[in-house]
Image 1 (cartoon, rainbow, N blue to C red):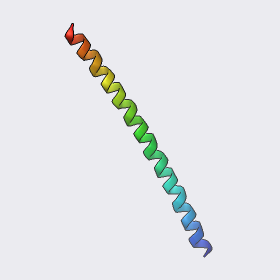
Image 2 (cartoon, rainbow, N blue to C red; image 1 turned 45 degrees about the vertical axis):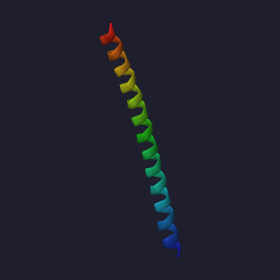
Image 3 (cartoon, helix red, strand yellow; image 1 turned 90 degrees about the vertical axis):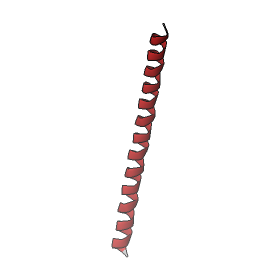
Image 4 (spheres, helix red, strand yellow; image 1 turned 30 degrees about the horizontal axis):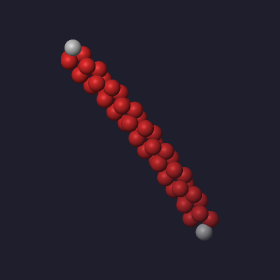
Length: 49
């Protein structure tokens, strides 16, 4: 029973670690998307002049 509990706790820890990595990846993707959108707006503005 003890080994099963430890295994479950380890899996929970790994799951939390993976969820944190996924959240960080989503934040980075949103940040990069915002940069890309801003760059497109600058290019659009420059080509319109």
